[in-house]
Amino acid sequence: MAKVGNWAPLLLIRSAHPRQAVLTAIGLSGAAVIAGLATREVALIAVTVLVGQAVLGWHNDLVDQGVDRRHEREGKPISDGRLEPGGVWFALCCGVLLVIPLSVTSGTVAGLFYLGSLVFGMLANVLLRRGLLSWVPWAAAFACYPGYLSYAGWAGEAAGGPPHWAMVALAAALGLGVHFLTALWGLVADNADGWTYLPLKAGLKLGAGKLLLVTLVYLAVVVGAMLYVAGVVGLRA
Image 1 (cartoon, rainbow, N blue to C red):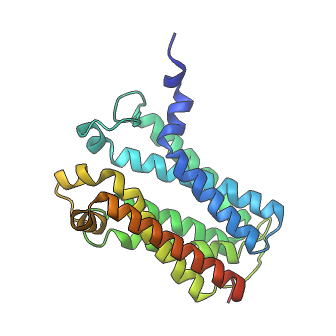
Image 2: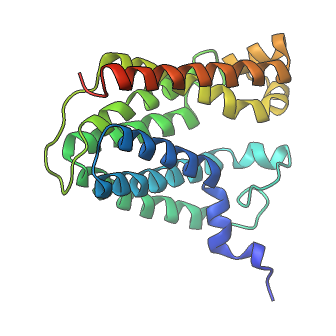
């Protein structure tokens, strides 16, 4: 009998980067609550973000399977042979077919903002990631989130308005910090592979421990600034 830990659905969940997916869903749902969205709209955003983040997680592990295999990274069912890449591609395609209608259910404009964030997220998996501009798609993806929330409605109805520029800028800054945070765990392997992206450059100068501390302080400051802006001017312009 196969071990429960090798059950394909559980392996798919592991490949979806579940912690990042849940944290992102909680973060955007919390922001939606602060923005005053109705309960059903908040629930829709949470489900949409969970599906979207799963798509990004699967895409990341599919793109990185060769690197993960070479560095023998744990918790990577695709690279260690427990999941067939073809099956994960099928799950990813199903996720895309699901996240599109989920996104536009919040409204066409809101949906386009969220789908735009997914496009930038996938670009982050394949373009610019090894060089000094690795932060650009991360910042662009997060900068889409305020637009997603500010236009969000229900059942495809037009709602809300454009986000405040300060919130967009802070969201982009948050994306930069999250990029640093997620990159920290692969600095040694990426350095061995000759990557030159910004978190690696900073890690080589500061050391991983100091960089983690600086990143956490930076994220706390950005989140605090977002809460302040939300309280003073709100989400929308």
